[in-house]
Length: 134
Image 1 (cartoon, rainbow, N blue to C red):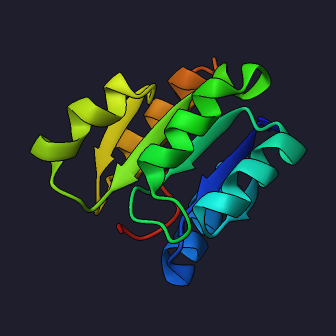
Image 2: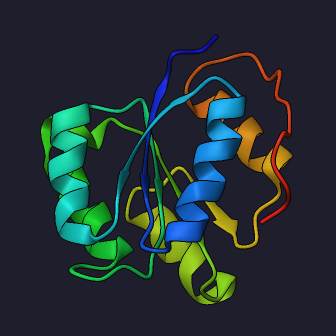
Image 3: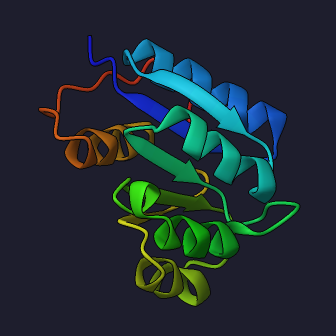
């Protein structure tokens, strides 16, 4: 059991549920934020091991969240995976330049996402895909 905590910043309730099912099945603890403002407060409160960040958020989009996380010493070290339905060509390099460790296009592949999470949290890559594709 990993015990690693992942903060998911996603405004779509159904997508949050999909993350919850997938991450719980793979022994991650999850916490959630629905917009840019609550994302920063939740990150400070929870001190997660990793953040999954959507770009299209109310109250501060994902790029604003990335910038603010990077400006906070305690939060800047937390790896961020951007998972977005926005155009990959227009947003991937911008997200990586802003501090994200990876960019995954929606709908994501469970195995790819879990492998990235395992790598970025320093875990061996044993993953099980217990949820349907998103």
